[in-house]
Image 1 (cartoon, helix red, strand yellow):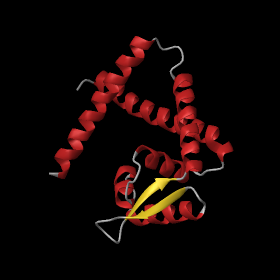
Image 2 (tube, rainbow, N blue to C red; image 1 turned 120 degrees about the vertical axis):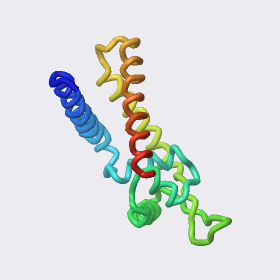
Image 3 (tube, rainbow, N blue to C red; image 1 turned 60 degrees about the vertical axis):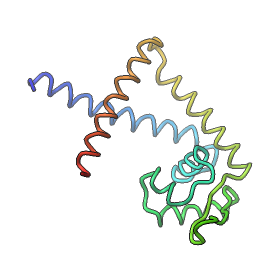
Length: 152
């Protein structure tokens, strides 16, 4: 790899990290009026995408330890954000579901995320934004492939 190409690749890595950090910071700022911590809104958001998930399912999706998800579920249940229902096949497991109150908050999170995406993609023509998403999806697929190869 040439020095120029290496420098561009390094710049891409830093640029992606900065974009991720800045987008998270801005989203946290926009979510602050809802009174939720990042851990709480992430949990609710993932559960909203996978209703009736078990705590193990969420731990895998969120790439967290099962005990951390279990503790967060306990806190959210006590606060009235989620419901736990017994798992028919496994008495040790629970299916989790958003309460109507939490479902409204998840819808608000969707709205906030959509507005943020519109703001950070401002000035990029739609065709270029689509190309950017395709290219970044390819980068992600390559990383997923490398991760899978490393596990084998």
